Image 1: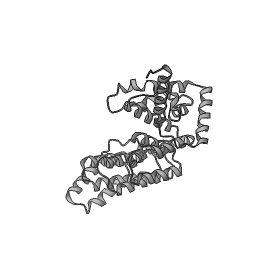
Image 2: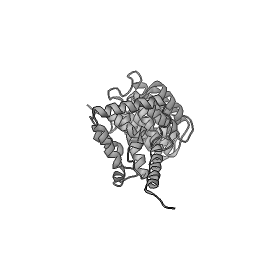
Image 3: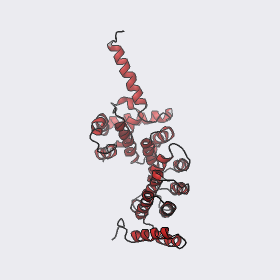
Image 4: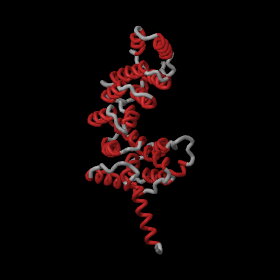
Length: 312
């Protein structure tokens, strides 16, 4: 069989289309939402294409950047954030490769694709724009890759709409293939419903890295520094978020015998730095076995000399 130039072109086109279709899990976007986003992207690019050109350049060089990685993935989120900081239309430029990947030369290596996809989602989520929420919802619903789902959960959590918080809380507390990714990303959702969901996950007595992911999310969510940022959380919810996160992290510290999990729980408690924690430790210690009481004493000492605490 003689392979013609036209046949080769057709094969390349089909392969490229298949690659594009699987780049991001946005197949659940409804027609109207997709059309609205496409219109917004086209209008924004017509006004100022600077951000779009910057994103296109990063996407085109994702494989080359991946070759420079020192760990499992290249820090694509940091590159995207740094390149687009202060540029108009940055969020729409970041969304375009997710919803229209066929327009781009996508990376070929799995590690580059994962890092790029998660980076685009994470950086786009920084804008906290409800108009982008349907994209993130579609990824949470349809995605199966850990980092893609985690990034979309973080993005939705930052927006913090009531219905999305309830949906993410439900996924976080329900056993499934994506539960750990949801739990890991939920730390960026500073809402009481999300904090209570993580507390419920602690009550399920997770172990190993699943347990570490829970307490790291609790530390991020209840962080004293993070909650002090402007508009980090609804003002009336912030104290409850911090208290709930601290209570859950301490519960994990008490219920686990795994050194790595206990150390992660202690680190989360230092980050949260809730005023109620020393008293809670004393209450638990009064009836604790000797080995746990000793661990609680050491934890209380660490909290008293908390290196993360900001002093005026």
